[in-house]
Image 1 (cartoon, helix red, strand yellow):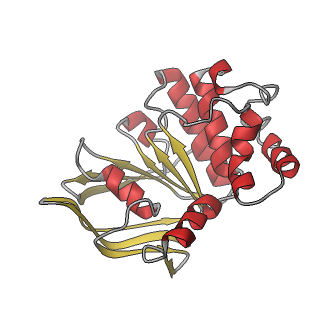
Image 2 (cartoon, rainbow, N blue to C red):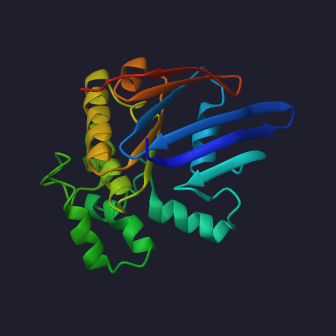
Length: 227
């Protein structure tokens, strides 16, 4: 596996509570990893640590071999904008912006002129089944459509890694299956790695691998052959 992102010996404590107790994890190009575990197990802390949102108390996070957990906040913020994509449970789209500008937003934040950024954003609408919805605002979209817009926003920067935190948690079962199938397939097609936290075993089964986390430790690692 050509490793894109790795965490070595990751430790994170909140007071007397150990959220991560020396976790090792790697993800490669076109690799999709689901992180599962009970509430309070450390799964979201692991995702946020790998994504540079939380700094570990011990260990290292490497992106294509370069350490990132010790970067200054400005460089880390730029890295999150330019090389990572994010999909959250409720999409976190800006309600005042049309869908095409929500998708273009990461590009504009990096300095791409609005017209050029929107043109790049529009290329994602047909592949994600969103053709004709470019001008709609989030309040005019279904839950599944809004999550597909969020997926487009995550991929528009051509990231090394897409992080998804309970991306189907607010969706019904049928829509959930459609969204996760789309998320795993398009990230794989783009050559990006996918790291996803989910409580749903059916959602996790769409990924290449599953990590079970409990009390800040990896307790089980399953690998699947995804059709």
